[in-house]
Image (cartoon, rainbow, N blue to C red):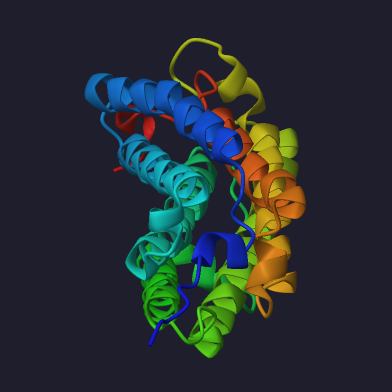
Length: 264
């Protein structure tokens, strides 16, 4: 009695070896740059971004293997690993954006208070990180529930995780806009030399916030249909490209303030 193997990559729309390979290679210089910055100017942001780039290089490498090998495409564990890596990585991008906004908030001459409604969550870094971790854990549970009979199993967990990520992305984006408005009025205190990131950091963070919103809105709209979400005509321009552009923006000179400038 013969059984028909499912090629999960083809079933879910993972087809381009070249696209995945290009992105795996494109993340390499960013990874090297963030690692060098982590050594020269150790900050949480650079360390987390180094981890993000390493995760994305691994995820795109697996995606290229899934697309290029019939045997790999039929390996459920490999598909699950790729799904988990793409879900986990967003934590690093979003938390880096949030951390940078909070750090620059501390360097405003007269920072406005965040005391109203959901904005109070943004003041509590530990709470924000815990909620992010909850979203990651729920998403990992959803990804690992995929099985041979239903590669899209675990959908309720993925929906819950995606909604949490979207809510935090919207809150963080709103706070970023407030930061930009506040910097334009009160000014940004920088003790170092004038740099693009130091002078216009809030606006660069707004660009990052917009890119993260594009990525997360797309993930939310398509969360109920993994085939549509993985359709490479949509996935690359609305998921992969916003992520790598956001990561590249973090490399702007002077965007990440050194620890020595932050209030103790």
